[in-house]
Structures are given as structure tokens and as C-alpha cells.
Image (cartoon, rainbow over all chains, first blue to last red; front, side):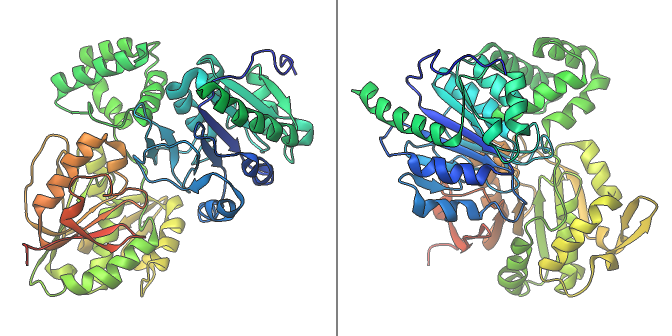
Length: 205
Length: 274
């Protein structure tokens, strides 16, 4: 893949992380989300492709394992730091310029609602270079266009190493579309997030 | 504000002044995406170009309106909502000699027909009138026809069953080729009409307003306007149902309503101070 070596651009001043995963994504999230520590700076948005009736259980599964508050937001809910927002089943999740959640039932994208592209593109609009997007395991191309939008807005893109993903197609599609800032196995992404949390607090002082 | 957003505002202004459809207070993030799709559909490189065409070619506007308005719906979407209406709301509404229900933002009519079927199953349809309103004339035409793609019927049937229905959905339509044509007996109790939550006012007193997954397309100011209309349209003790991810929590009208079902987002207008 044509990704530049990790660390080429230093990740600083990140305020939001948008994460997308499909098949195999939940396992990756189970490693990533509990590694985040509450430092008052980061808001996390997550889209996971799930059968319509099942995705509402994700907040229930993750809440007890995470230091951050986990929720499935209502429309127009104010985005807060130290919160993880899971896209509700059968809704696209977007962010508006007033930093509130905006939901839609527009057509599925890549047969998916919620769609990762929809989240990434809208978060890129709002957070620009303060956004980190992470593409995890999955069996379709959702997230690739979105990752490109993030990169074009000056944000950062990290892709799960396709060799370590249960289904490599989603990471591969993203890498074919955009020069990622880093391509890493989940354990290393986890370490990166930890580091980010530490750095954020330094930046705030 | 980036260039696209500036062009977007100009386009929405132009549409308002020329066609009197007001999308200026719609939620921007999803509208932005739909306008990007519209640009592709009409082969325009920029929104300014699309604006130019929208103004110069009135014949193009109905097609553009399809991108600006919201369509996705299904019959008995969120079966538990309809179950809650069946169990908690209709027993109260049964005490009224005649019933008026407003399905606001009915799009192609799925929710309006669901409501008619629900009222029929609870023995109330004969004395009910459903106002089904939308701003898109093409959607209203489709709604009035009461014809749905047979491919979506399986999902509708499953939803209907899970809403606690006593009979099968197939009792209410005739299948013809690729279509399911819903019975005239349902349609007799539905009035489809053009009404905008952004620019029009209240037109009747009703006992129930069902407006689901419409408010999510509005910004907060327009949400307040719409909920204000519902509040004015409802009789004292009347009911309001909204989408499963919509909330009155952030509204200044919140105190006017009591919660009937938090899970299913059903509220009841409080009476005059007791």
C-alpha cells in the first residue's frame, strides 16, 4: 500500500475520533474503546454495521467496559467530551456545526444505514484537522470515501492493518483511496489512542 | 462556513423566493449530502450551477424537490410504537365520539395507511379522519394511489405482525403484478393534503399527531415551530408520537407534555392547569 510511514505528520490537537467497522469491527472495538481514558478533550463517534434490530445492544455491551460515557444519542443531542456515541440502528449519524448530533433516515450508503462514509464526511466538515478517523475490519467499501474526505479536510486517517483484520476488504478499500497516516494492528491503534489522550491534556495547559 | 455551505444557503434562498418551499431551516448535515447527490443526478459541477438550472428550468424542480424532501419510510416502522398506540393511546381516544389524527410529513403514505389499519383493527376507523400531509406533491400523489412495491411488503407484514395485529397485512391489499394495492375502505378515511411545517399554520383540532423521523430533518428553530404547531393542533389531553430517536427534551414545549411512553416517544398534552 502507498501509505506514508506512521508518524510523518504529528497528531496533535485532536478533538474527535470517528470509528467505522463492519464484520470483525466489534472485536476490534472491544480492544480499542476500553483503552480510552477520560481527559476532558475527546469525543468519540462509532458506526458499526449491524442487523437492524441488534445494534442497540452495543452501548449496553461497551458501557461497563469503558472509562468514557457510552450512549446511543438522540437527534440534536449536544456532543460532549469523554463520550462515546454509537450510531443508532437504522439511522445515519452526523454532526452539525453547532456540535450536536444530527440523525437521518436517508437512503442507505453501501447498503448500510448507519454508514461510515456519512459519519466521516460530516465529522470532517465540522472538526477539520481536529479529527482522527479509524477504519476497522469489514467486508465492504464503506468508509473509503469518508476517509478521503477526512484527509482532504486536514484530518488524520488510521487504518487497521488488513493483514490483522477478520475481513480485510474495508481497510484495503480505504487504503486504495487515501494515503493513511498510519496502518496498524488494533493493539498499536490502542496504544496510539492512549498516547493521544495523554497528549491532549498536555495541549490543554 | 465553507464555499459549499455558502452556495447551499444561496440555493435554498433562491428556491424559497421562486418556488415558496422553505428549506432554509433544515438540518444542514444531511441536506448537504442530499444536495451533493442532486448535483450528480443533474450533472452539475457546483451548487451555483444547480441553482442556475433550478431557476431557469422550472420543469427540473419537481425532481430536485425529491432530493430535498424525505422519503424513506415503511409501514409500521418501529412496531413497538404502534403496539404502544394500540395499548396506551387508543383506549383513551376510544372515548371520543369522533377522532381526528394528523400524520405530519406522510411522504408516500406508509405511515398514514398504517394508522388507518391500526384504527380499523381497534374498531375506530369508521369514526376517524386521518389528515396526511406533506410538502412534496409527487409523494402525495403516490400516497393517494396507495400502491406499494410488492418487494417491500414482506418487511411491512413482519412489522405489522409485531405491532400486535390480530390479522395478516394481506387482508388490506390486493397484489397485482409487482404492486400491492391497498383497499379503498382505508383510503376513504384519509385526506391527503399539501401542508408545510415550515410555513403553514394549524388547520384542524386533532386528538393524535404522529410525526416520525421528520423533525430530525429540521434545525432546532424549525423543530420548535413544528412542535408548536402540534401543540396548537392538539386538543387538551391529545397525544403526540415522534420518532424513536427524536426527543422533546431539548424543546421549550417540553413542559407542555407529559410522557406516556419514553421508549416509544409518545407524549400527551397536559390539560389546562388543574
